[in-house]
Image (cartoon, rainbow, N blue to C red; front, side, top):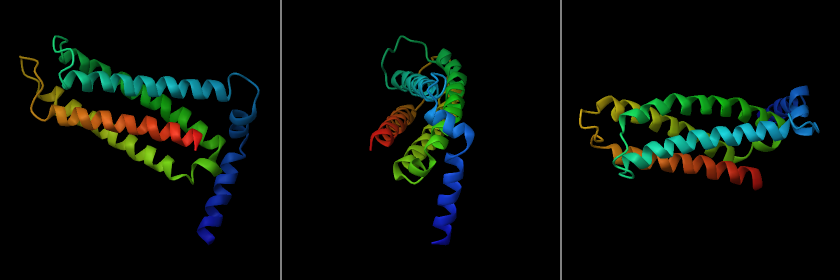
Amino acid sequence: MFLATEATGFLDTIENLGYSTWVRESPSKFAYPTVLLLHVIGMGTAAGLGALISLRLLGISPKLPLRPLESLIPLIWGAFWVNVITGTSLLMASATKRAVDPLFYIKLVFIAAGLTMLHRIRKNVFGRLGPSDSPPEGSKTLAWANLVCWMGVITAGRLLAYL
């Protein structure tokens, strides 16, 4: 009981910070609408580019060279960091509601799994590409896992906003 009270007090404090209030209540287009827009763009970029790599590994567009797709990974990481900043801002704006919602933690698990898949794809696929540019064994499994993770992130995020 004491821990729950302490956690609730902490979440109230976060939610009532000046920045949190500004994001949540400001009529400025630079507050909530912009933070949310940047979050959606970041998610679309991270999930979209990750899906592009995964779909290529699954055999879609086999004439598309695989090796150059590795250059998309830094863009995915950049989009991820945009989402860390904007997601933290959105969480702060409604901490007492979001931080106690199990969907929030499901989303975080899918994010962690998706980043793990991205790392494994970089290491086990791009790190083992031969001159033939054909995906090494196990690539399809990683690709499917990556797609499932990012679909999970998007689904949990949308449900979090509406449930």
